[in-house]
Amino acid sequence: MSTLKNKVYKICSDVASEYPGWEFLSSGQFKNKSLKHLTLAINLGFGFTVNDTPLLPAIHIYHKKSMALFKKLNGYDRPTSIVRFQTVYQLLTHMPEDLRRICWILADKNLQMKVAPPSEGAKKQMIDVTECRPILQAVMADGIALIEKLYHLDSEESFLRNLPPKYTPGSDKVPYDEFERNKGVMVCIARALTGDFDFTSKYRDDNYSTVFPKNLKEIDSLLEIMPELKIQFYKKNNVV
Image (cartoon, rainbow, N blue to C red; front, side):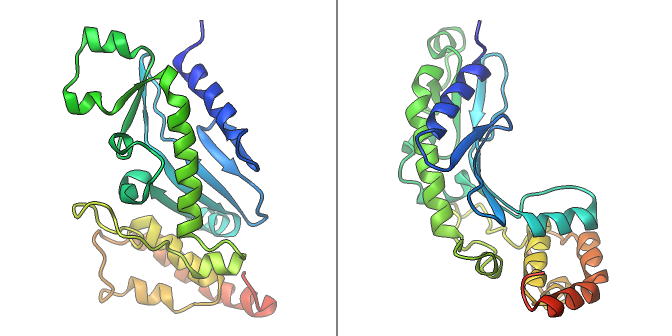
């Protein structure tokens, strides 16, 4: 008997095949590896139980050099850039409006309605697994459109120099967080890789305000190797 995860993953694979250059991986992501220096991804935010899974898509950009440097300094991985659909839901045009912030895929929606009837609001955010193909197609379409809108992909240098992505969150209650915590650290790395060796010090300074406390340990690790990055940059006169 096929599980909910198997059914959803099969549909995801079929959907990915409709978009040249894209594939669906067991990590729960649509990925495009057509660019040499980075991988584009739409992470679907699955969290499977026997009966359901949330669908919480996010753009993930995996730039090889910035991620390698981040891991070298800090010992763990993170994508170069992450933008969650629910943060910019107002920019989505393909996903149904009721599903743009949160969607639940159910193994048996009719059974769920009988056993534990949800509120009307929650019901609008639920779909049966048999209904999820067009929703996943909409996720792909919106994801590709967001990538094209938010990132400069014409060259590696252009991508790095234009980080972080610029947008206005859809809700006043959600801050623009592209300079926060590890996202801020990644911006510092991106700037350093393109020869801006002063930004990290400016960012660390108390006069540079952020919503949340800065990740000073990670920032200081980057500052320690800044002289080495300068040497590498001026030898290449290009992205480190």
